[in-house]
Length: 146
Image 1: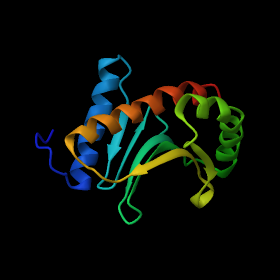
Image 2 (image 1 turned 30 degrees about the vertical axis):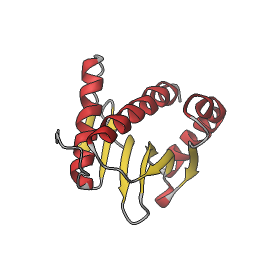
Image 3 (image 1 turned 180 degrees about the vertical axis):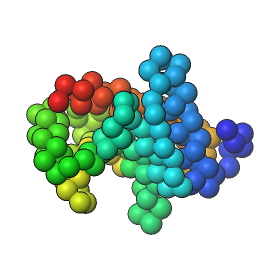
């Protein structure tokens, strides 16, 4: 991890957050699979990565997205949307009203929140990783029942 308090480049910031998220789940006995690209990090359990948790850096919009993405077949995505919609109030009660469920590009679905991009410093690495782990721990058990 970068030890300065200065802003990190988005790709370095994302790599640090992803490392913290992975370490958290290893420490809690539930290792998660992951894939990191320059502007996004994906996490999932099991062999099917078409449903995954994602952190995306939207630099043009100045936002960071934290969420659960359903990028499977249109039929499966519609079914998962319906299942998550039944739990949406429960999810918003647990995680806040900023969680949104929506149909998205290519017949995909996402349940997500966004946060401001700045600052991208060391303190924010820990705060964002903590929030993302909270989202994952809330949504994974619900997804597992669908």
